[in-house]
Image: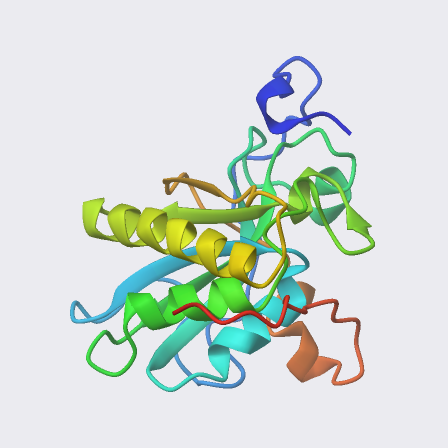
Length: 207
């Protein structure tokens, strides 16, 4: 599997010009999956391994308007899952969270992010191996970038105190284009309650 800085436009799947066809609403929240969203809401974009469990983690929180899973951070426009699994798109599996900052803060979302996966594993999450499973925080403004970077420093300190010396490999960068995943992946664990979920943290809290 190529490292993220070895993406090759010559071998990346060409993708497609159109978005994946989707149902209009989130099957749990009942709200729209696509913008426009109310102007009082904000957006977070995280990758923490397989996006099925990650999406459920966030839609269960108070203050979440809607969530959607997709692909971001790579080369291929509007990729499908089969293309992602070739390892040549460069994308990570991500969950986009539309939230009300009056009810849940970005800092609280970051805490859930850090505590709910292993951010030290590079291009994998447990037995899921590949660039699509890397740990990423895609930020939408300077405030989010600063908070993400500060919590990364804090969480590294907490891990060290807990005896975990491996460095955090989480990528923190400005949000690229978000491409929706196919309909069958949206709210997957609501549609398939016994479906695969590899989400699990290191039992270390972000202080």
